[in-house]
Each structure stands twice: as C-alpha cells, then as structure tokens.
Image 1 (spheres, one colour):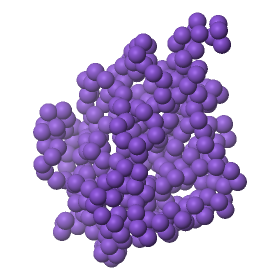
Image 2 (cartoon, helix red, strand yellow):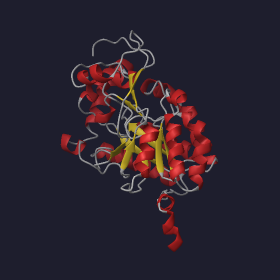
Image 3 (cartoon, rainbow, N blue to C red):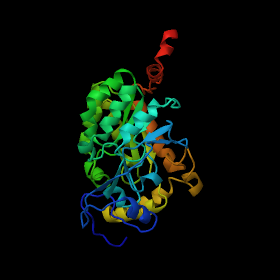
Image 4 (cartoon, rainbow, N blue to C red):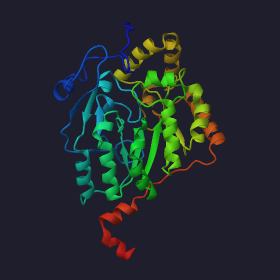
Length: 343
C-alpha cells in the first residue's frame, strides 16, 4: 500500500495473492499485461445461467450474469467495488447464456419470477458492444414475455431501446441506473471504465421519455467523498425522470478492505484517515455489518443521517415515488395458452 504509482484507467490498483490464484490459473487466459493491462476474456463453458438468491437483501429470486469478473461473486451484488485489479482485467463470458435461458424458461418446472440482469457484474460492460449477449438475452425474455430488472452503470443500454420498449409496453422491465455522484472527476476515479455522470443522466432521461421505468441506485455512499451530494443528486435524477432512488453505503470485508485502502491512499491521501474513521462508524459492529437487511444501509448515527438526508430529499424532489410491480401473468399465459380459455 506504500506504492503510490497508479494504473491508468483502472479504479483498483491492488493485486493481492491468495484466494483467487487457483481460479486465475484454471479459467483465465492473460491476453495482455504490463503497466496498463487490458481486459482478458475467456468463455465460461457454463451449463447453468440463473443463480437463486438466498438472502433478503435482494427482493427478486434469480440473478443472471452474461459476464462475470473475478471477485464479484464474493462481494455485494450491487456494489461496484471488487477485491482486486483482477475484477477489472479478467472477464468470464457466459457465451451460451441466451440458449441456457431459453432452455430454462421452456422447462415445465420453471416458476416465473423477475430476473435481475445482472446480479454480480454489469451486463453492459464495454465488451457487450461487440458480443451483444445482453441484447440476445433480452430478446429471449421478450419471446417468453418474462419480466426482468436491469441494473447498469453504462449508457450502452440505450442501444437496446427497441427491445426495452416492447418489454415496457407489457410491464415486463424496469431499469436501475447506478449513479452515486454528480462529480465526474470522482466518478472517473471510482469507475474509470464506465459511462460518465453526464451520459448516465442522459440515459435516465432517455429511458424515462421512452416510457421505460427507471430508478437510481446511489451506491456506494462513501462518507467524506460523496455523502454531501445526496440532496443535489436526488434533485438532479428526479428532474431527469427517475421514478425513485435508493442507496447502499460502503461496506468493507475480506480483501475488499485492502483494495479500498490502497485506492483511497493513492487517490485521496489527505482525506484517508478521516474517511476510514467515518466508514468505521457506518457499521457499529462486524456482526451488524454482515447482517441481512442492515449491511447495505448501515447502522449507527452516521448511517441514520444518510438515510434521513435521502428521505428528506425524496420528499422534496419527487412528487410521487412509483413502485413498479412487473407482470408475471403474461409469461404463464404464453407458456400455458390453454389456461386463457378459462380466464
């Protein structure tokens, strides 16, 4: 952590050894290395694509990831920080995801429930522009009239507006844009290979104008870096057509803490001590920091202050908070058309 040399274009600067070494050797081919490594990709060969949600922090039942980055499986599904540089330079491609999804939705045992796309890694990574796996998945979901919830940081989602509009016309899709700062310089430090703040705001407005329900996830909120932006952030996303905004506070665990400390020391050395002290106050104990229902929003006075700011901002800037419940009946009628004869 004393080495202050930075890697251009990457948020994570830290490369620990240990937990992922075997996975790296077994499944990833290093396409390019050096001081500014480019992303290396490898097909997954996976035989399943849907992951069942087993904890209460996520309301839906299934997650789906056309792309996966190392380490994200061990982190909070909606949290943009992974535990090392590998999460930004090693991408596993679930190249047969559309076919696996079609097979799953066709099975007699499948019970309809909104699918989260993606649960671990952004489904609109830069490589999606070339591979179009996410688009193919959306087309399968439209074919089956199956509901989906999309979470992304990237404006590339606008490319698929035609499919999204068809899904939205039948109340089968809602989109969450991850946006936790209006300061694009801060965004560039935290997420250098994602769409700019301005592009994300344009995306929110574009989706909303086209009738696609869009909300915002302010994640993570980091005290001393972006917590002071809550009021202006809520005001801005509301004016761009978002129907709601929620938040997640930063939570450090496993190698994530070492990675974050290294990044913070390199990026904001003068703020390092104050920010780390405030982060410690977000979770009053290790137990509450890992407890379902609390680990995303934190506990204690500082966490309560953030929640109260968000509550007040939403009350001021949103005329109405619209909760979108996606349609699940249409899939059942498509799968079992004989049922409609008695409906």
